[in-house]
Length: 502
Image (tube, rainbow, N blue to C red; front, side):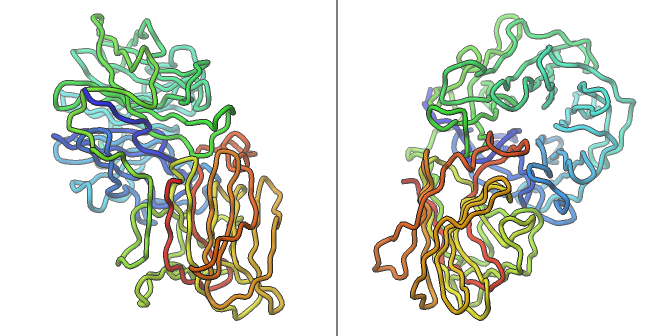
């Protein structure tokens, strides 16, 4: 038995789905309006995870042009069958449900194979008689539907059948089917993906039902439970190579003392076992913890996984951790021939627009120090470049350098709801370069700058963490905070970016 820490994948990584190939485990999560879509993580022990690829890396696979905030890519499912990896998901602001596939998990995935079925949270089930089933929600009925499908084309091969309306909680969704000991188990999320979230399970002798509910449902729920983990649900289960069973799920870590969270929904892991009646028991009677113990399939890393990140832009390509907002304008981003700089060539779009010139990484802990160095020449009015804490186009804080009427200023700006406010503005003696710093916290984000490496950091101001929390947004949102760099109406060079746990 070994102890391990939750969450196993920190920061905005919701709706996990997992598969096993031999001794290797692969896990995917949702990405909504961010690009590239559906990250793929790899592990040998279910605890130490490495980002190895994305399923959706091309504009032809992922059209986010009309994606509203928290539109785009909803919950994916990953499965492996006869040498092929399949990922099925929904682009809610494009054509709906689709499948992509590959024989090389590290390589390119196919273009989308679209499916004639409206709903979300699709899943694939490969039965042992050779039939392949689509299972997902159904917009028309509000239930869970099942039909046979060709996974390589998306073609429906049978009529759809409503197999369940859940166990009586609201919003039955996230269905996965498994065949275990001659039973078909239907795993669901119910209760909504907020603080009443939960996982329930049913079983039948046929994939089409009728399904009976587990007598101790929900099998996972932190509703009304005093825990630093909340909103647990949207789960997937896996048997490891040693015959032990595990469940991955999403959850949130609220800010202490408040029902607010800014890191997004994260991925958690818990052991599970089957009781004498063939029903799963998850964690500690349906509860999970920040530290857990289990018979992991391989040893845990001796050193604790680091959330630190640094990029000096000396590579031939950007690191995999970087994300864009919606489909990027590729010509706006270049690793320069001046070794060690990322060049942002921005039009007039700002962080409040749908496609800003921005790249960011997920904020993975409450207390992070992010820094960058900007080099630029001012040749016109209104040029901007800097560092941001970004939730979406309506909620972001940024510190940047800009010019007005021949003067250069450092500015702290805040956007919350429909209010955009310059909170601080200081004239500086600018000589072509400046460093910025954001220190994140449970109460406030702090913003600072310095003009040379020998200078002390100068604090410009603060902004409330609550302004970047999911519960405070004016629309229903499902994402988390990013830390990143941006430019507007200028060409700017970034020498490095770092984010380290304080």
